[in-house]
Image 1 (tube, rainbow, N blue to C red):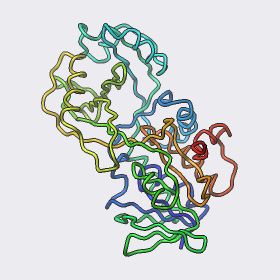
Image 2: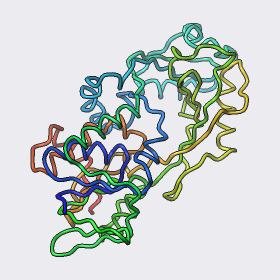
Image 3: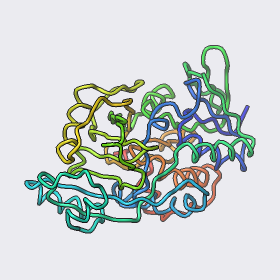
Image 4: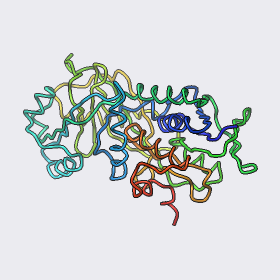
Length: 358
């Protein structure tokens, strides 16, 4: 038996296991054969403090000091917002939302020499974002969880969840696990886990995000290039190990599944990127997709279920899982162990699943 059972071995579940393991017995169950398989393993993460709504930004900023203290997790990167001639109003709106300052196209081309001056009419920049080494951060949390005594089990597909004598009984058909508190960190499957546990879903929606890796244009060294984002998030690109990652910025509703990139969606996104540069896109080196799962109000869902407090939500990370994970895990640990959260009370209320109770 264990005090806390976590369903889901992505960044949310693993960081929560790390935060909780010094205080209680923790067992984490992951359905796949290795941890971080779905959205966590497919993220092209950067840390941008102004990414997300007000609640997400509060979690970003609460996570930043700890992320900065971890050697090698964050590395300085610039960010360019780019707009076409007809996108002036939308460009100004996005620039204000992202906290970027308008600059000349010539300055932008000095940073990214392949930008097309015929189509790139507007540019805005900020220099205080970071590349986020997702694997290093995941491994850091895994090490902390194991050092704290957490048990991490893979290949456990939960088939039955029940309550017996005030405790949870979870089974994959062969093995059974018991706990006082069940943490639902199942990502795209979080609503399904809630229903399986006799708890009302909160309306989580998985949205597909596709990605392609393309060769460095014209053989250039792209490692110092900024992340680039098209107006309206219609495409974005960032350097990655000597190549470029390019996304169509898609957000197509999907049922929970092992997602894959749609060739047409990917081709359309690559075409939007290609319009803004002077080098053609050849065949992608690789492509993939992941599911970013959002609550109806786009904020994370963290807290005890109001109808069954022994069921704890840690879901709805959307595209913000890595940059919010430190604060989300600390809040989870505080609420489960009965300590006062470091976050402002209004932020705690804003992520609570109680907000969905009418």
